[in-house]
Image 1 (cartoon, rainbow, N blue to C red):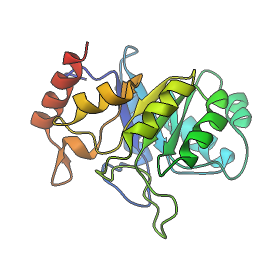
Image 2: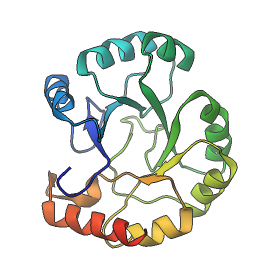
Image 3: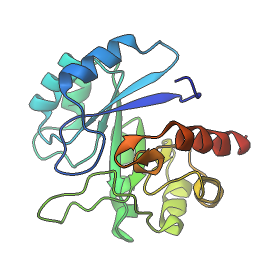
Image 4: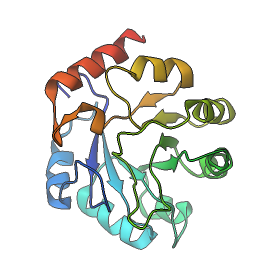
Length: 199
């Protein structure tokens, strides 16, 4: 927040990737985030009942669903959690991601494009450090009316090029501002400095 972030991502249990914290710590952080900054609970849970239970405990302002729902619907989440924003992650693996984004966008408040892989035995649902095909992301941005966030391998060195090529509503970063798995304040400051140059 000191460097000017608009939102904080609170990464709950994941099958892989950096930055995971306990729900207890996520709850503590969410309670301290000022109203001017959004708190995003990143959840890999796929059933709405379990997601609702987790959100009611953590009390973040936004739910970021990093995997597809397998039980329940977005409407179930909206009914159970009024006032909580929903962001669905689409892992851009090819042209099929355009259809997937178009299908879910009317159900959520925003879409986030990332570089995970849900087909692996141990799913990658974020924090891979890999970029994806930004041309596909650009097409998604152009087709959707919902806000689109861009993630996936963003770093201080490539964030300007990514933003200029894709034209997203916002940017999400995790591994690109870490050194040996820990948040690196120098990289974070450099990332936000590049973002601010975009205007």
